[in-house]
Image (tube, rainbow, N blue to C red):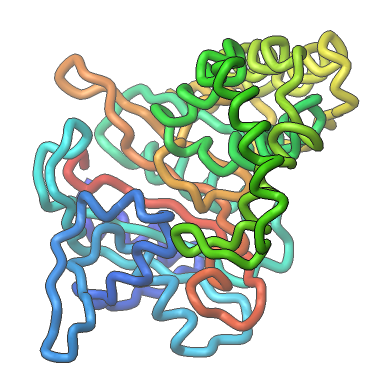
Length: 347
């Protein structure tokens, strides 16, 4: 597919072509990614010691541009250009050619989710790939599942917050299921030490924290919200959920059966997902719980389209809903948004 054919599709859907900056203040990237992007940035400081970076993802520039333009109405943009990330196992080249398209200020989330999905399918159909697979999930389901588990509140927050950091996420689950990070002898000693510290001035500072704050945190972990004996069962439920993969048409039934089995008091309606059929021409459509986990800002529907090139499976296009991201990056109000990005090197 040529770029002009891709742009023709996007313009026919009402997306307006915009130009984006190639450099951006690093703070925007780090706010967006929770700091996980730091290792991939090409960054530098100006004469005023303000840190700047080559754009690692064009959607960041798009969001910042939308905020700075103070747009108050529903907006549909598309853009194309180069993003820059230091190489790792996922990035063979430091230069990534992307085309992105986004809808800001969604008035109807389901309608706009469907538009992003169906536009993505049309782009795939116009590409040179004969077969592909569309995988769909929703972060809301995972968060709702975790909220219904009998985990301590702080652990629920940690599990949800670090879902995008797969290695660290798995380490958290290991701690929860085995308690290998807890030494009973050390706990007893720590409790005795805590009782002695309670007699001291609570405003005493230790490494920048008051003794009062330290003891409150200690009491939360050991008395108010101690690790429960059911954590191993909860970890199994999370791991079993992340193994679920099925045709999208069977997803509500499969999920509801899983929720009933584990007594989670959750229900997925038949019209919950933006696509209900199991396949369209040359593309299979699946529900998969374990996709798009590298970025932490997704808040709802997520998806990708995978294709095979030279015997290797590649992500041609991926995206999702990221409500709240704009406020996190400086917008005064919560602003809904949904979009996707295409790996142009595969086209």
